[in-house]
Image 1 (tube, one colour):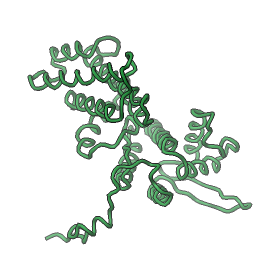
Image 2: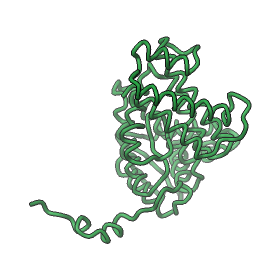
Image 3: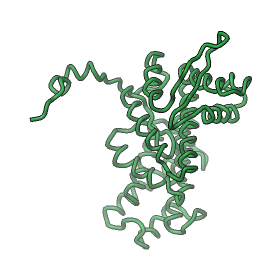
Image 4: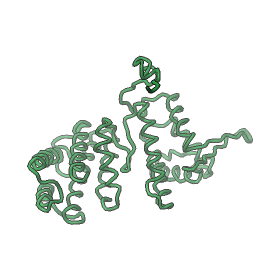
Length: 309
């Protein structure tokens, strides 16, 4: 006999202890929720020390994952990428560790979702660089990924961190069985160009506008094309999706049973129709919607999953 928690015996108690927020964006969080998320991250990833000195507050980030030097690089890169905005205004004026740490905390608490997620993306890139430097590929990054996604899920946030960047939140089963294994495989340098197109697709999707959804469709279909070119030719360069699928099946590089042939035919039809109608590679009949962009992403990920996982 195993001891059960009260929440396991009483569904009403579980609802109170772990409320369901639905799917929402970072901008829907209140300040208290953002502070709670920060505290959970801070204990493991960021140690913050405040010292009053000459009526000023000094910040120090120091943990096994990040230090002040890395935070300076994150804020500096954010300012370099977006000079007109210069989000790290304190660091822009005073290039000190304290200024960078102050900007990091201030942006996390006060800025729009686009800025916060971009800053967290740069934070994740710092961990990838640290992993590469220490020759322990994906060690620090994957640990940060797992903790951040678990934390985001408790607050119902609509994004997940992957090795290809932040992507729209999917059903747990889709994430576990399709997205995660595919993106882990694509993190191999062999698939660099495929991964880059997918990263661009996810980035465009997050911009949440009609033009960006069309860009998302185009980048996703290009990722499928690049994948097939590498499968068949060993490199990207030439070949349309329809012909490449046939070649790959003939060479037994992807499944060629009758069921798979039907699936590939339907997938190709969906992708080509969406790229023709809403993508930017051809004159479009209309802009893509969030729903159509998500469909193309999911169909493509299922295609990859069926081919390589």
